[in-house]
Length: 127
Image 1: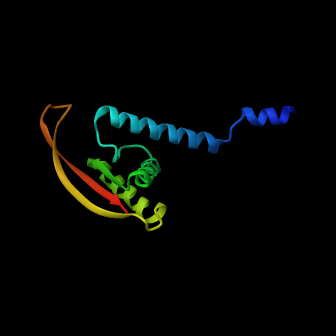
Image 2: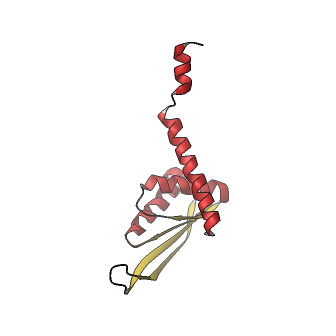
Image 3: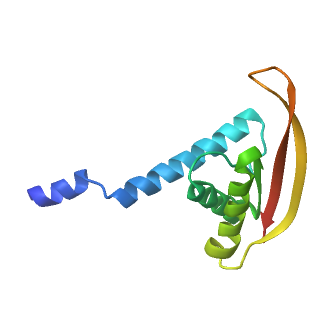
């Protein structure tokens, strides 16, 4: 075996590492949701890059047929962006927004201990 071919086997491309990392993250998230009792087809949008949530939603849509994208407070606009990316860009028109729920939740403030109202959104995306 030549030194060049052995180097190829030892080094991996960035794309291979990214796809492995994404698959690992997705499987870890699925295991976490099963162990904590949360629904497996829900995605909670936070501070990560939008495409992380969009790819996760796309994977769950292909496996389950529906996914609920949830967010609270300032992350609501990101949840709407994720739904738009999935339905218009990545889904090629195969997925649509089926339902949108907008609510207000009462959350106890960590600073003052008072109850505060926080807006939340749930977007149901499916075939």
